[in-house]
Length: 469
Image: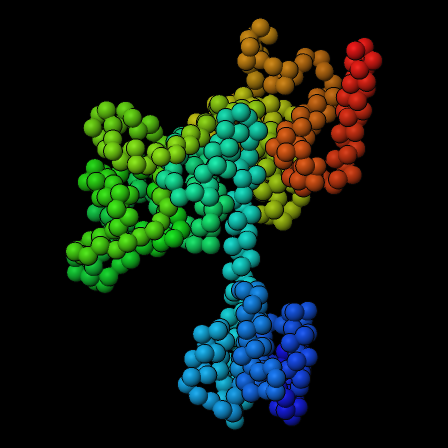
């Protein structure tokens, strides 16, 4: 959008923009331009500073009132002064060009402004995508233990309480940490993750708190630590159980004082970072053995969240399998693969020492190896069982949903599994049929067609009960 009360100047700038391959919206009336601005959605506005009634600063303020979604603004003036330039930059002008300007200079300014605007737009989309990715409903599970996890996350996400996530490797602890961050008021600030077991003590201290130049061999310049990087955001300390005791003492001080001190520095720096920690082994035995500070444990475990192993929530496997099939299809841009009933049954009778991560890896491998878009038993990893040992029917762990009935037709078994998956997905999405159809990768019409017979039976049963009553 080009705005100048001199029509000749509007024509000149329009010609420059068109030469660069851009569409233009010319206005010689700044009042009319201000009226058209909300509906025009320009990427860039080039406006003269001095115009009757509505000046360039008024146009600039209108553009910036919409926040980061507004256009970049270049102001042009024949009456340049330091004061007006400073004011324009404070309000948010991208550039300030004085007349008479060189054509090449204006072209460079236009290109830089549009590149900047594209980067802002891309960053906004990425942040939105990340927030969507780590919404609560994207942590999959309908089991009672996972519902307890969801409840805790919902209650504490938008607080500053320190959280300790406990669970075996592969249970999704970092996913929970990210969900806590991206569903909090800190979501627009950094999420910084560090694995405490990946670095030796001296390097981990430097990573966490930073260091001053010359504080040790190799410290050739000042380094900002991860706590500083996470200022006003969240720092995730994974595998906190592996942290050396001297460093535990320094971390305790940070949690108590909300201050850090760089290695080799005598001055303290105030930091405001929410701390979320995780451990893949119980900390109480380490406390009793003198390997972990008890006072640090209670500072970290203000809100403990325990992630169940996959063995403890086997009923979530069909939903997880479907989630990973859809995720793989999205990543590859193809149609979702399907899984045979036999393969799904085997997946439901494996111990999963690697938990959800192991299941996801198995599904990704099977998607790469399967033929015809259907995952079969032979597509599963070699260490998975290739058959299921029949259980004692009187065993309380055996249910109709876990083991198929001997003699049942294959198409009937597939139908039962399909209905079970739909019911689990509906429950997971709080009864929302739109979300369920999207998660299953089917249309709303297909979903209604599959659940309508069951709904009719339920209505019929309800009617019979009512009549008997």
